[in-house]
Image: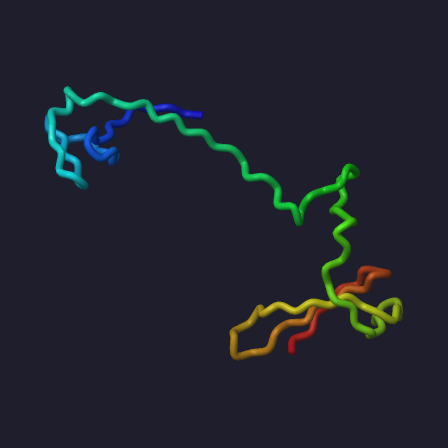
Length: 118
């Protein structure tokens, strides 16, 4: 948390720039007065880290939440490493729009991963 004194326009509430001379003028409503006559308002700012997104939430053991299940589709394609009959897959557009997408595969049994460009 930090605090600083900063001048605000008493007419419109716009933040004012610190003057080079003795006079201060609001850029928005053109209110003008001597800077020494200005009442400075204390501005307090607070910052905090953003909360962890729910899709990254960990369970009590520190693992990703298993109750959400796997969000990838399943295809009947044998794993090239362990020959498991099904694999998860999803696609992403990694190259330019006039080229095909990339298909990512993952074996649910041995977690072998590979990708194929369409």
